[in-house]
Image 1 (cartoon, rainbow, N blue to C red):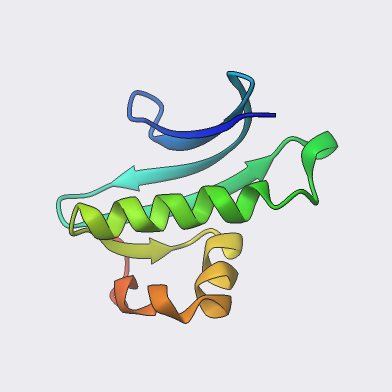
Image 2 (tube, rainbow, N blue to C red):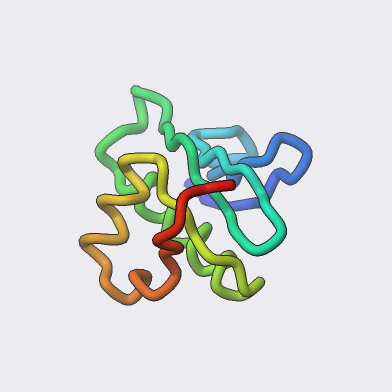
Length: 97
């Protein structure tokens, strides 16, 4: 099944699409110099396929590309960064504004 990841700025979330339908999302709050990830979710029937990891990896890469610091309020995003140290430099240690 084709997988696509898009930044749905109108809903402030990255979405992972399978066959054009939303299979999961990572909600965020955009601040001037930071992106605060608040919640990540994949449809229950699609869990265990690595979709959340693909989604969060893409979202973190996009954050790096745009020069944003990351505030991982979402536990999944925080754990993902712990397991993938190449993203640790993105984390903003100060509290979200």
